[in-house]
Length: 227
Image (tube, rainbow, N blue to C red; front, top):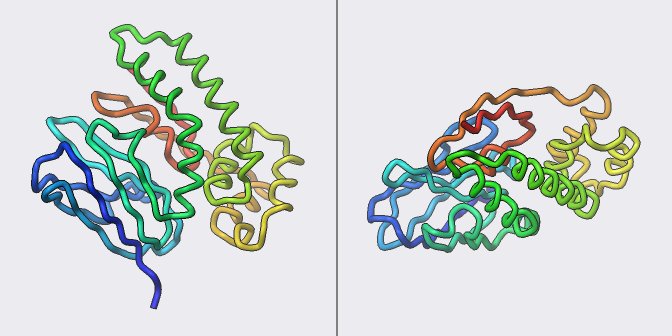
């Protein structure tokens, strides 16, 4: 019998019966939901192709609140307050998520600064560009240090065009069998042999929606309208 994912959440700041949705990034669809009661809710299910990049999200007064999960069929605990979303929620119990948490801890302060600039009445695009450059360097270094992980391979696929073909091949050659034979490793293999398919997501960033949320997607080349 295959192991299921189990999510136990304790999140303060939401009214009883507020519904949280577990959103699959790849399929752009909600795969589970649960109503919060006395600050708690649980979800359980089966991820057919684990691990997966997911949003745990809800709305309050028209604003979207969310955090990002990158998990397999594991038991995961999510703790925090409404004010901690999206960057500072505590997500534990998953060794796969642990690597994503390392990436988040390295980038979240820059993403917070970026969002503050976007929220200004006249966004400071020069400042945003500088932040994007810093984030890019962090992501490249993260790949070099953590390519033998699911999140490292997700980032390598997203940024493969920024490395030489020889570098990508070298990363791939050094993968352990677990990662080389996974969905994430096979994408790198296919990239090396046929190139990466380009998908375009044309999105506007409205109230309550952050660039981190949009940038978290798997393999998307974004054409983002931040008006």
